Image (cartoon, rainbow, N blue to C red; front, side):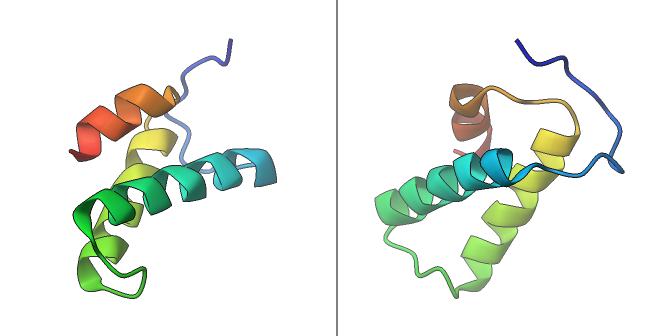
Length: 66
C-alpha cells in the first residue's frame, strides 16, 4: 500500500502517470469531452493536484472529479 504524501515535489512515476491517464480518458469518455478541450485540461490538473496531495486510490480520485 502506498503511503499518502503531500510532497508536491515528488515526481509521478511513469506507471502512476499511466494510471492517471487511463482514468482521465475514462472520465472524458463518460462526459463526451475531447482530450484537447479546456474541460479536459481542468480535469487533468485536478487529478494531478489530488494525486500529489495524497489521494492515491483511483476510485477515490474518480469520485472526486465527478
